[in-house]
Amino acid sequence: MDFRAGDSWGIFAFLCAALWNLPAVPALNNTDEAGAGQSIQKTYDLTRYLEHQLRTLAGTYLNYLGPPFNEPDFNPPRMTRAEMVPSATVDFELWRSLNDNARLAANYRAYTHLLCYLRGMDGQVAKADLRKSLGHFCSSLQGLVVSIAGVMSSLGYPLPGSLGSTDPAWAHGPGPISPHNDFLKKMDDFWLLKELQTWLWRSAKDFNRLKKKVPPAAVTLRLEAQGF
Amino acid sequence: MANPVPSACCVVLAAVVVVYAQRHSQQDTRVQYERIGADVTMKCGAMDWDAAVTWTVNGSDIDESHLNGSYLVLRNVHLGHSGQYSCYEGSSWHLKYQTSLKVGTPPKEPVLMCRSNNYPKRFYCSWHLPSPTYIPNTFNISVIHGTREMVCEKEAVPKNRCHIRYLQLFSTVKYKVTLTVTNALGRNSTTITFDEFAIVKPDPPENVVAKPVPYSPRRLEVRWNNPSSWPDPESFPLKFFLRYRPLILDQWQHVELSDGTSHTITDAYAGKEYIIQVAAKDNDIGTWSDWSVAVHATPWTEEPKYLTTEAQAPETTTSSTSSFVPPPTTKICDQEKVVGSGAVAVSWAAGLVLAAAGVLFI
Image 1 (cartoon, rainbow over the protein chains, first blue to last red):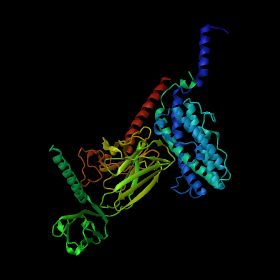
Image 2 (tube, each protein chain N blue to C red):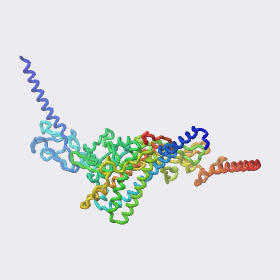
Image 3 (tube, rainbow over the protein chains, first blue to last red):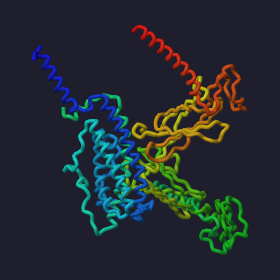
């Protein structure tokens, strides 16, 4: 091998190393940002689709639960058990000041847990066609979770740890279901559907904000995500 | 020491005057409320039943047929009976009793509605009575959100409205608003319950402007602004609904627009005056606003003459450029296609020439 000059090999080696590490510096190139913008739009569209699907599903399910759950004015007080479901309710100023990472993470965590609870609900439903609708909805909801994860990774944010010790009580999955109190179980289902509906409305607003803040053609360096 | 006696006298005199004035003013400010259709009996103060008295209403004597002894009896009262009633002792003409009678009704169930035209800042509730009571009413409103009672701040103008700030967004718990109306003859109340999202209804879009597009006889350009009351169109974008029709037709055409505050109508009938309106809605929640103020516009026409609402000229134009007269169903695009295809032909010819030249070169 004829080494013309050690320098050129050195340069070549440096370039290789740089290129090798390039994928580890996310959102460096233009198309990634454009991708994020598109993903955000897709996620937004998904929340609208799911919200629409949920309207039909919730109607059917509440009828299955029977009165008073299917009455339009039914407005029970929240019980502590039901608070295990993650709530979309948030102080206005706090919601407005959320940074993109926190906003996305809140959505991700919420839907991951809601999906888990929904799957639990699915297993107990007696009617076959309702089970099928629930199953279909769960798949769509799974798609939403994946979509949010996609947005987060394209923007360089780490996915929230699944069941960290800092998470509130509900993070550890649904609590023991009391087999003796049918009414309480139905109340839990009622609040789960309500919370899901509210989250879908909130997500539409969350993703609207994100759409504005991630312009498709911008090039940004997210070095902070890598701890530089 | 002559001074204390006159000053003591003055004090006593003043006290007597005050007491007398108080007693007299009490009589003057006495108000009596009665229902329409009721029978009212007024006693002449402490006078006996068989005392000789004269009653007056608003200064005019009342006929003796309405008297039962010294009592005044009014049967089946109506609004016309409202007034100042006074009773005078027969001969001395001393005023013995005075009252202001106000005839009215107890309140019917009030009409209450709540709406947010500036989500997510605040929402307001407004109310009115379906029929008047003719006597003063007081309104009391309570807003309950879950376990919390919220304060509804009353507005000076209009009087029957109050607003509440949203402290939390995306709430699963409904709001429960109760309005109670009370007057001297009774009370009534109504309650409404709603979700945070259900009452969102923006104000109509503002500054709607429609203009013709030069050299485009079938286009109208419409622009508008977000309603100024909507606080945050960036985070809470609005979508719009545009409707338009020529004045001469009844059928509206509709376009829904997800973003932007302008739109170009491309299928207007040439030379016809159009009426255009726009409505707004939050992209995801709530209901459509009322229609905006209507604007009128006519598409650009060949002659600079401004077409008014007088009888329209026949569809075909009379100028020399009538070689192209689009029937209503064809689009302006046809003309452009004709022009465009000519340009395309030219470019094809140029291409062939260049290709031939290239072949020759090789």
